[in-house]
Length: 272
Image (cartoon, rainbow, N blue to C red):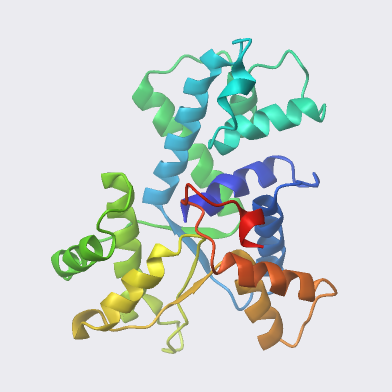
């Protein structure tokens, strides 16, 4: 989902950098696992989630105006990954001190710094560059069709997430993802075997959606939900390939299963 893609772009930009944040370590390990077992794993994301990444990039650019405030640190840490990564890279001297946030983001996306865009043109350019990068990572980009059970799924989804703080667009995108995962016809391989659809996410709300879907015959198709480390654990065990750091991965995977990265009141350290 989107939170995975956001960080994957940073790793693609600095593939040899040892990111300190847990989320980046998880995505980096996930990326290596997928490459190791590439013949057995098909990785997909949706154009909707890529558009959410574009939105995250736009939010980061909007924060640039605050960088010169003398009391910036008093505001605390931003939730924008690219804004935080920019600041961290400057602290670690990975980018020059005079590089602006805009220049950094344009460099990450390999877009001409001197180019002038309207909002729509910039969105389109970002989307094209992200699509290009993710396809290099062997990630298939899907465009959701019109689902026959959309209204049924929406009613279930809204009941499960009642009171949750999500944007309308994020709700629609996650609903479409759940409907896609529940559609068996989307997960048949060339030999007519049913694959095991799996959602890689830190968002624990999908558990409730999946369980509610299972109670409706039209949507009763099981799909897995794993955090990055939990997925690595499962793939490693099923292929009898246990990594030297598997124990530490297992500990983190157990914690991840109880951690929702959309939470506002707990840190990952608190869960550990």
